[in-house]
Image 1: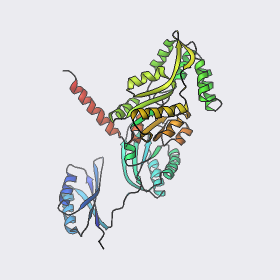
Image 2 (image 1 turned 180 degrees about the vertical axis):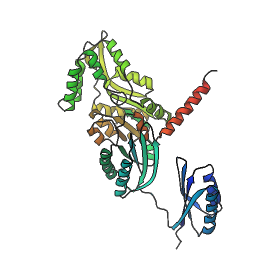
Image 3 (image 1 turned 180 degrees about the horizontal axis):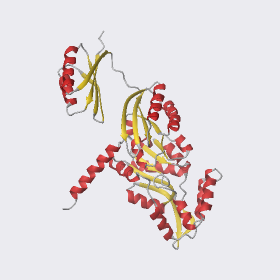
Image 4 (image 1 turned 45 degrees about the vertical axis):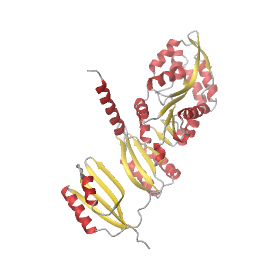
Length: 405
């Protein structure tokens, strides 16, 4: 019967400096060892380096201890070596637990870590994805039931006033290739129809119809057609003025620019109007766009729509159509929205994200973001703020180098 392998866990801690990893592995190279895992973290100049090794026969532990201790002493580090036996434990079902807050309080981290422990799961790794304009910390967790942990952390999220998302780990998140966003109150601030209504002098009537739809007294299409009817006679100059009023959500340009760099396709789908979404798509380099169209005659709005209405089901259909055009499976899509009209789209996508959304949408989505920064969505995809800023700096250098002198 073969003997189980011997394992060694070597941990170095202290002030970080160049060459630590190289020096450690140089002395380990003299022994017949296999590297199982390596983790290194540097926080404000303080290093924690852990190396897990195995050996099928009895290693020269005295020599390893002495050589590692010498390296640590030379580098002014502390060293610890722990030995064991048996196959290294395999991690079960890795999950990513992403926590966002502005600010993010220690109590929130304590509560979330406590919930993870109470579920019988283990925290394998913790890292920071961003510290401005929001703080984002990510836990890599193994041994948890995703649905049970998501339910437990959803309650904690409300209590701690922090966003918490639970996603499958591994290649799943990296496989995302298409992101589709709602427009009003997601990609842009506010609602276009409210701005049009203010220009047409019917803001109160439009608001009343919107409220009736939200109470379930009117379906989306009926409410939309009645609101559009109130805009009859509005001059196209007023439409142009509203277009000039539009303001993107904070972080929208960063989000789309970064995703495009990474090879994502981007789409927008709106219960609003092509008179606005077409311009946004062209300005931001968005690949796909679908919305309703306001009918125009003699330079004025007729109060009618042209073509089929993009409603809740229409948004999900648009997501499917965009995915087919991109050659992407639905499991590789991300949908972002804030209202009930986005529910089918969010349910259809591989990852549904509620952005500053109504409670029903937050409950239905896989993840929720309540900070006003749209680029916080990047963190749910495992993209850090440092990655974004490094890419921006590299592009700036290339642009400066290409400029005529």
